[in-house]
Length: 130
Image 1 (cartoon, rainbow, N blue to C red):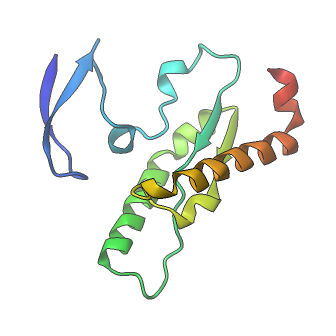
Image 2: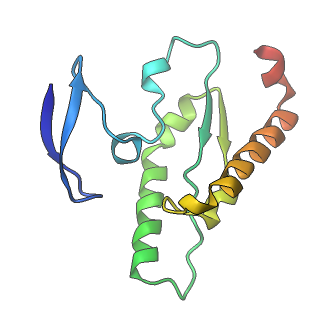
């Protein structure tokens, strides 16, 4: 089943699939940290958030300010989900990257790897509980 839906973010007209009354769209539009499908089905929930909000600088242009506002809004919308996780890993070093830095994927992956490695070192109880 499909429904027409306009995204305020992308401003496109697209077909959004519904399965068992659940909307399935890109996480960045509706739910960037989807904890609901696994809540109550897992022993531990480890949430890794790659939504880092960059620092605003005085030389920021309209596009950068708009992008930062969107990321800050997404972060705010996820506060309730963050508190539902047993462990939360925020990767603030990603603040220097944006959603369109496709060519920088190796550096982004390395930040994720290093961040999780550091988190596991700081939380040995997590490793022991798995």
